Amino acid sequence: MKDKLLSFVSKYKYFLIYILLFAIISFIFNPKQKEYYLERDIRAFEENYYPQIALFSSGVLICIMLIIAFWKKFKFNQILNSIIFILFLCFSIFFLMQNTVTSFCLFINRLDTKKEIIEPYKTFHITDNKYFIAKNINHPNDFINQSDYYKYSGFKNASKLKSGDTITFRLKQGLLDIHYFTIKK
Image 1 (cartoon, rainbow, N blue to C red):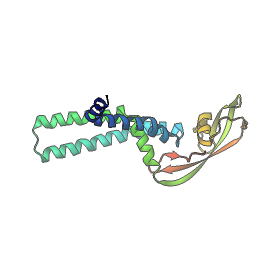
Image 2 (image 1 turned 60 degrees about the horizontal axis):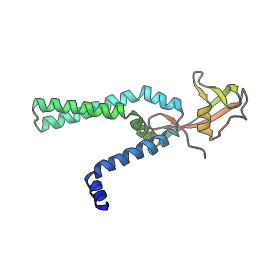
Image 3 (image 1 turned 90 degrees about the horizontal axis):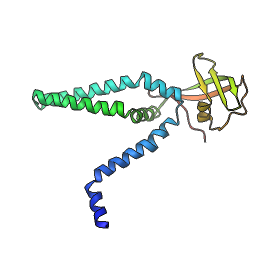
Image 4 (image 1 turned 180 degrees about the vertical axis):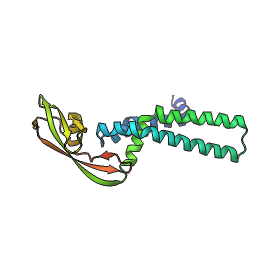
């Protein structure tokens, strides 16, 4: 039995390493990165910047592949096959693995802080002392809800908040201009 297990592991070691790495990234790394960001900031990044990053990176990969192909004097059908392979690879990486690529970008964003920002929010709708909406005092179209407040503050309820209270968020602007905060324990 032990010999069968060892032969199985040695035969499929790269596949097992891939599965282990994929599990660590999917279940530990990705959720951990999103703890530092408000949902609206992650959504804004994915809607505004992610398509640009995916297209730019895909273009760079295709250019690198074409330079290598011309340098090694590939035939036309080899170049065409390489382009199709790179397009499939880019689609796989940037669109099927969007969550993982977004998490890596969020990690890179936190490597350096450009400036610190203080955002004041005024609560205006509270129900049952736990569900509320707050509006940014400086930016009228910026709202937060209880989940953002709980994530930022570490509190599990909003029973101390009243309508008209001001909540202050200390956010940092990272390398990619995405706001993040330090987790309060």
